[in-house]
Length: 486
Image (tube, rainbow, N blue to C red):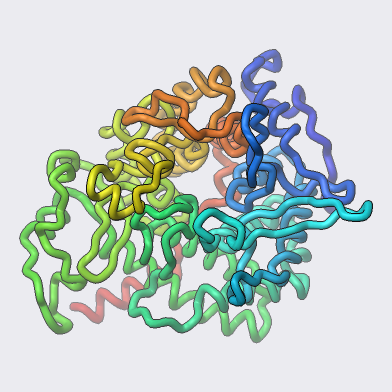
């Protein structure tokens, strides 16, 4: 049974914190004020409530933005808003998403929705990218939706919701969309630029790490949520095979550390056949000069992207952190990623956790990769800006790898400025010292991300809601691959 419990700011403060803490109390009050109601029921949170600038689409509820708020509501015993969100967004999945005479694929979840009133009745209107700047497709929405549905079921035990026919059909539609046959040889998911948190052109088309980490977590979520009937068993077999190959591919080919860098540096190009070592024909000259000095002796990370003669050597934060949380990265790789973050703290965290990617692209590269985007100038917004929402996945990765001191260090740093700066969307500058030039104030996922990070650090058991342990199916498959190789 689901118990509806209204938010009480004082009683719902994270354990171990004084109730009189003005900072914490302010954050909870702002989160409560951001809740969106539809026909009398809470269904989500608005992206931001900035009183200084025009709302544009920041008055809508974005799927990816709501995840941190939703996890927090689940932790605090408020599942009703998450249940309503899951039901309403599922209803929007099958709504019309036509743009310029083309229809998006079935299974696509909206990027955002808004409550509108017409003739005294409330309606939900969804945006699948047809109104977005650049008309970007929200590939990550359906992936986050599956991850959130699993978290809801784990919190409430309400498996009946996930087993409802409409939810089972929604899960299958997402799987059909994500697992469709395509002109691609890799187990990774092929997407265009702007398909996830980086929703503007930044040279991330292809197989970006963030999508692969979310894809992996979403497939594992779906495997747990599908009914154990004939259709569920068929999809379970498909999922097991894809999860194993995806896991192997990312660990084997995306990983970068000093040893791997030396191997790439001595690669031969134009190799042919099964015995090729340089399988993706990566040219040694493509290794950027900054990386040869920046890579520490110990520590490493997963590359941002991989394709034919293409390896994106930039560090993408959410992809690496979610790879740890989902166990897409191995235990050794996860520890190495946290070692790298600690050793390159000033570059990756700076004065505000945490940089979305490092380094920024500049000069001619900026012109080519961004199309001269004035919002993505170097060290701003998606091009090397610092995003406080990344505090919660950093805390989650720190807890999972047994490095809680890194999570607390980041939280304490954020507390020095977030309230004073009015909870901005992002920060600018090489070290994240400037409030973003076009940053919205009172950004909801900034607020929720901070509160969620504190919950994760104070109560590590909450990590179980959205994290995964090593997949036994994958381990069995890896053993089989090693036997075949040798």
